[in-house]
Length: 631
Image (cartoon, rainbow, N blue to C red; front, side):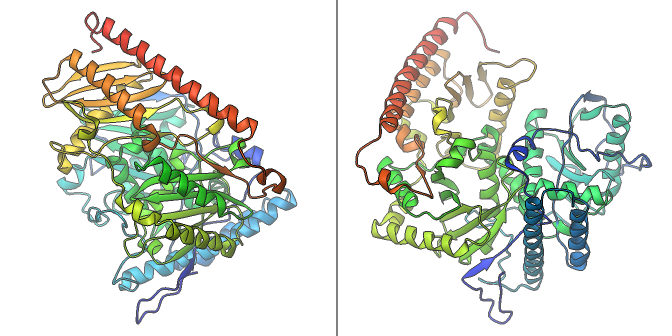
């Protein structure tokens, strides 16, 4: 638990934060199946919900409602001072109703309840300090941006009746099944209660016919609904994004909340009290959700469902991986090194790789949490976090520490399954820090930067995004992508957003559920774009407006050759593994094992086959480009 001096604003070197409400860990087999969209047993509709007025008018011009069969799931988190005892006792009472479960599950639930109490009290204390301007480095909030430029000003108190509120490009709302507002991206939840009431009335009306509302289309807006258990998420967008893209963004919001509370906790709360007000627990976490939505709008990682790796010499990346491999302790599952909000390297426990892997979505949520809180710059943080794609019902315990204060650009994240492992994990960090100082690794990382499109050496190419698919299954690594920095004419924020909108449009057409495409050649007013998806990669390119099809094909050929040449610098090709219970008889032997040699050979063979496939695809593209128009 962090302690701050109100006079000096100093913070202790070690801060321990713990999360949410009664996280009951499930059996591993059950947890593996729990993230499928299965309706909650206590799934309910508020039949007495009245149709309130809609003064904001977001839904008044709807002319088409798309209804399809779908399956719900569930949602959310929150925190406020006046109701701590009531909220925690509610969770405790809910857990007592599950007394018929196995004794080991009950023990885990009790541990989770302790986590929940510490986390809620800690976050409330931080929120109070923020209000009073108390804390380290002036009035830094524990939920303010770090490592990135200051975000846009808060719109929490924006007048929802003003025209400026209606002109926002995208609204996101979260409400409970009982119609209680939980979160709004713009404006206060209280002022929007009538609008959220209209949304819940639509959901309830369609549910009464044994259907689920998925979307509403009007002339200028697209309204997308997503239901997860007792919670409903709604996106109202005037952008050209597809319904599936908006739905994926809502899923990120849902998962960010799950990462703080766990799915099992939320289910248990609403089973006990269906009209529970989750704002009691979310107060203070709105900035995390706001930051997530800002990232979703500006970072293509979310669009591609992939992780952006910082370009790094393969020798340096391998050296960093070896450092992480040697600093291990029992129950340490993931060791992650991040720099400038991009991935440097990740090392995973062998047994975990055999069963599952860390998904890009989970890493995105982790990066957003770190970037949203300046408290992580204070020293050493020990906090529970749920990784929803890995297991939505259990916590990992994350040790988070920056290795290069005061710049705070290189961050170490160690994930353990042991709540009491803080000191042993902190010792791992000390070993990592010493090894990096010995090898002068921090200076080398500081010199690493994203590359310019001019380094590719392809004329007329302005920008691109490349996502490889040719990753051997036995490595089970993160899905990654590479992309150069956006340069002129995309230097301004407005132009960057315009280019991302073009990419989103191509992505939506490529991945359309009704008519998916493999190749799109699109001539826009200011640029020409080409999107191409094969079994080996997904590629989006932007050229100058006067480029021809033939020139674009030749440029892509050169680009693919350059990526292949630089892939060891751009990607983590073969992620290292470690065992927290090493076998001395095996580790003492020198040289590669037969299995490692086979893996190396198969990797090279796959690279060769990949080159052949790309060549055949390019030949096919050239043969058909004059006869068929992808548009």
